[in-house]
Image (cartoon, rainbow, N blue to C red):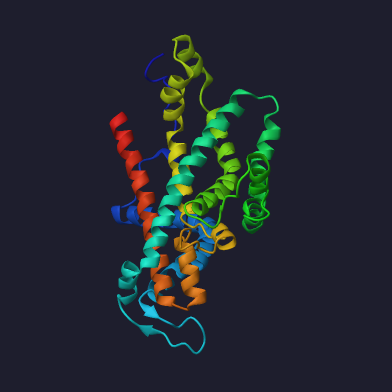
Length: 325
């Protein structure tokens, strides 16, 4: 075929032609596109952002403001600006220091016990499939009961005079009963037992879902290489579940620092402030003594502590990931 007979080149579609926009018009169109994208995203997020702002952000800012004031909670009680006086009182208040110490001890014991039991039971349920549904329901059932009802159930179990545990002890072992709620540290350990009993089912199912996501090929390969159960758990299961463990730790710290219901029902902070927690202290100061300044300063302090512990947990995980990389 000669050059004369060659077909003419096809016309280039308009969409394929080089852009003819000026730099200013291109930047304007880019800004317009980003604005439409942000507006669309804000539209989808607006229901959550409205609820978050009304029920969390605004009350938190208002609480920070009230922590520098005294009074103003009820009608007829004028609000007086006192500066950092409330924050100074939080440091010097001996009752609050005792509540912080009790809460810290409770958080450490409760998280350690419930995580250990949850991982152990989740491993059993993951290994033995037969009848596992019954045990899942049985473990999760206490969480369905309201916290007040669960605390009342334990009150009738551990009561010194007619509690079933003391009746069994007097009948089987003999001797006097145990003052579960009247002596320290029995009272605080009883509170730990109540909360572990309530939350164990949730954490068992939580870790069971994580264990079922561990690749079976890795477990089988390690087993062929001669690795025992404990070594497979330490070298395969734990590294795989590490992000899940971090999330569990953060959630557990946040919820356990807010312990209130069981303490209010079973001991009311006693004996001798042996079970007083930070939230119980805030409730007492706010509603019994109307000490609004100290209550709000303590609540903001608790919020700061929880945020710092959460950030520290994420920072430690990030450092560990960098070392592993």
